[in-house]
Image (cartoon, rainbow, N blue to C red; front, side, top):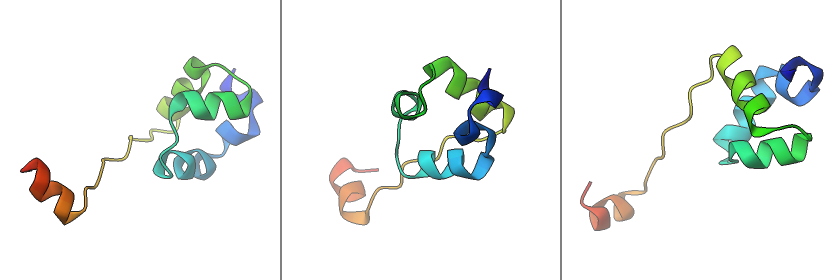
Length: 64
C-alpha cells in the first residue's frame, strides 16, 4: 500500500521528484516499491504530471 512509504505519503516530496524529471520507475526503484504503487500515490494526491517546457531555440527547431 502506498501509505507504507513515507516518500509517497508526502505530496510535496512526490511532486518535487516529478518536477525534477524523475520517472515513475525511478521513484519506485528509489522508494523500494512497484511503479503501480507510485501511480496510485500520484492519483490519490491528485498530482498532474508536469508539462515539458521547451526553451525557445528548441521550440523553433521543432517548429512548435
